[in-house]
View 1 (cartoon, chains in turn green, brown):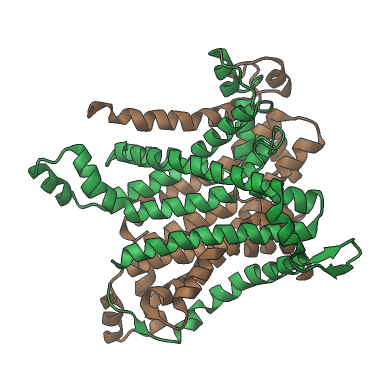
View 2 (tube, one colour):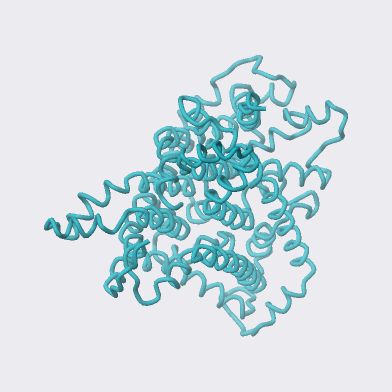
Length: 288
Length: 266
């Protein structure tokens, strides 16, 4: 890439974006910061509490449990979706009519509103009226995701794999398409097997899109709310109460604004920190 | 080995289609049949659920509201992101890297964190329950994404294009509209697709910021499900109809997705 020229007037170009995003980001963020250091008993009367809520949240077992569930969930879906997405992209047709068919059908789950995804999986997996529930019970496994935590986790993960693997497929496929035909011919002349082609040509070329795929899937799965809320309601018990679900329960269910705000900030900082580490590694790699 | 490769995508697509088939199946059944018997296809085929949606304004208005704010958001996001992405791809300026990362951090903000403050902010701004409120709120995550995608595409266009245009006597606005935008049309298509997608599927903020006049279809569904008992057939029909706009958009950008991603750095 050519060197960029320094031009401070470029700020005028970014101004509309900065204004729009700052309006949506800074004012609500300051509201949250404001709540997080105060106690209220309603009637708009507030008392300054300092960092009490932060200490409470950081020491609360409930928060630790939600965070652990969140990390496990995100870890599991990344481990499943990324390799699966790459495998499907590798086996997709290269050209012709079937490419369009595959792309359109695969992208379909991505454009379904999230609560519809939850509702759809609810009626699909219910043991009495759902096809999946009937099938699993039919092969002799006792399955009821509204009662059994393991089944609830299985269903939530399966739903997420159903919902989001296509994003990885689309990105990986686009990465594969950018590899010039000459690379493959050269590999053929060298007598490289399909594993060698994958390891030394396809994987390096997909690196950038895969970083984006992992980053997007990490962020979105860490913030997941609507789909599991509609599917399981966070249950049975608290089995699938991820961070966002827990947060909304505290903020809107119990209306504990102070603790909810403190938890929001801690939650946001965790996402930020993990993404910053990731982003730095990604940029460092690119500079080399 | 070589012959069996078509199997993987086929099985995957079958897996994707099963829950959608089940939703369609239910949408053509009466509630009695859904709860009464387990049937793989509708025995008592009915269009009643769809008729209800198309004749009841609270239902069909939900679709119009959703489409309304999604289109407004896509237009705002892409048009604001275009000059910004150009600046990021062509110039270095004070704080550019920090600004870029700050924009991306907003894509990482969990909507659950912002739900309550957003309600207060847009109420105070007298925008509560308008499509503009939802469209602006969705800018929080769509503008950073659009800037990110467009910057990738623009960096793929050699700088010589700009310089040649100036030598040929183009002014900057004329160059941007006449030459640059057509060059990155695929990128604009991809960015618009993602803005449309994330605005269409988001519910938490959209639900928080509306009550009647701009209530999105997805929220209409949840409320109807809880107030008038368990009308599963109706719910399934409403859900099935929310798939259509998305399918439409995918069909139009299907060639851009593969080609577009490959062109840009994205």
